[in-house]
Amino acid sequence: MSTTVLLVDDHEVVRKGIGSLLTLTDDFEVIGEAGGGAEAIELARELAPDLIVIDLMMPDVDGVEAIRAIKVLSPRSAIAVLTSTDQDDLAFAAIEAGAQSLLFKSMLGDELLATLRRIAAGEAVIHPFVAQRILKAVRRKREPREDPFACLTERELDVLRKLAEGGSNARIAAALNIGEKTVKSHLGNVLAKLHLADRTEAVAFAWRRGLMHAEYDGD
Image (tube, rainbow, N blue to C red; front, side, top):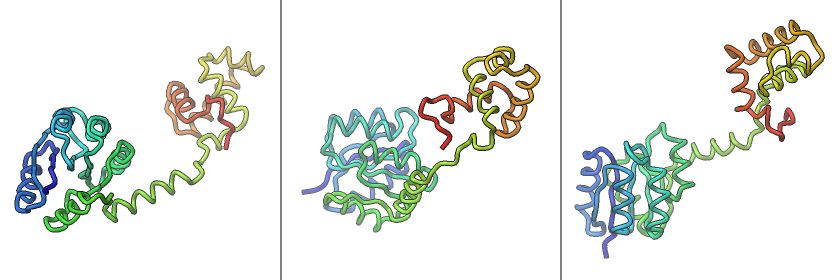
């Protein structure tokens, strides 16, 4: 019994190339093609293929969102992602969304066929080079992150917090019991040390990097 396949890529030449390769075998049957994520979701719902080979970069619904929707509509479908060397973030997100396998677009015919056969047999296949990058990314996430505010003094941190809370120089001075000129001096140091252009960037940086979160403790 052949494995039914849905091919998803916004480049027709890619779909036709893989489709032509699969038609040369007796164990695969291409039952549908989609040029975008929305069409892929609809075809997956309608056809419930055994295997979906999908690109991540598409013009309407991206591959990650399509995978997430497909796994709800057709959980039985195995999903193999076609990735390139500069799509690490999307590739990791695709795994979290439900993809079982990550393949390189550059894989040649015999290698691609052999890999698709393993996936059809129930294996989760991740190209060794992709797997190596995943391991490196996981290790980086486990490493303690450098405190972006470590270069600031306690007083400069106080001033930055008050600024991020919406305080003017006068209000910051009153709250910290210091002069407005001192506030301006501290803010100048903050901008210089954090390589920020102005007060607006300083406020955004403070919130984005966790200074204003209750759990921030300077570690």
